[in-house]
Image 1: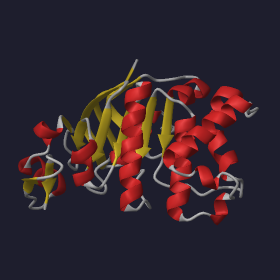
Image 2 (image 1 turned 60 degrees about the vertical axis):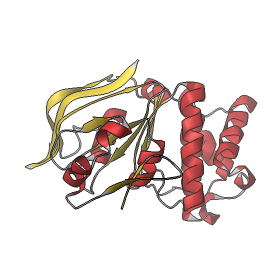
Image 3 (image 1 turned 120 degrees about the vertical axis):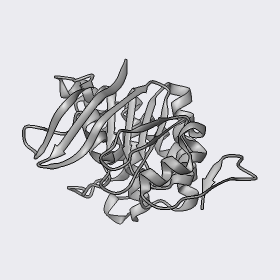
Image 4 (image 1 turned 180 degrees about the vertical axis):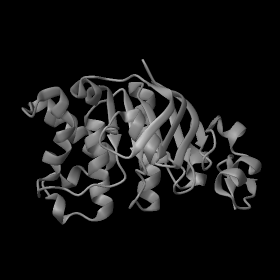
Length: 254
């Protein structure tokens, strides 16, 4: 099974946000997606996740295809986990209860000891095992972001779509998250697609790098292929220069 789109075009009224986008996410892939604000990264993730109700929104697909399309939302949520940029909690549950929500599509809300073990394991992997008894309204923004990520991992999906998961995270937590996701990708053969604004972090960790220029096709390939001054200047519409980091031995911008 793969998650893909081909020649996908989409617009909000007369404003086109995706132009002939083709992308395939295989199990085990680790793709970082970068681009300017408004380039369509969030829209692309929503469409790939199947969470965008086209009949209720202003977004219109004018061409291309998305595969697979699940008619059963519960099956889709077992296969694909989508983390939006932000959310507002409806009630002040405990951290453990919030993370356990990731098991809902598999259990219907009746959680076993095994489900709780999975939730605790993912909390520890993200570094919030000590917060399980806290209520989510008592958390900092960065702590709540980690809770949301742990909830997505607890879902045990085949594909993990993350929209700016590093938001609110400090430098250390950001690097720990990347390492955790890379290990998950390798050990469970999970396909990961994440949008990120930190271009240097993307160059350090991406297995596959995607650059999404405004209203242009997606640039997709290895870091060595895609992380060039010409591609970056086109994507971000500014003068960017590259050097090879002497310790990390990977390209970085300045």
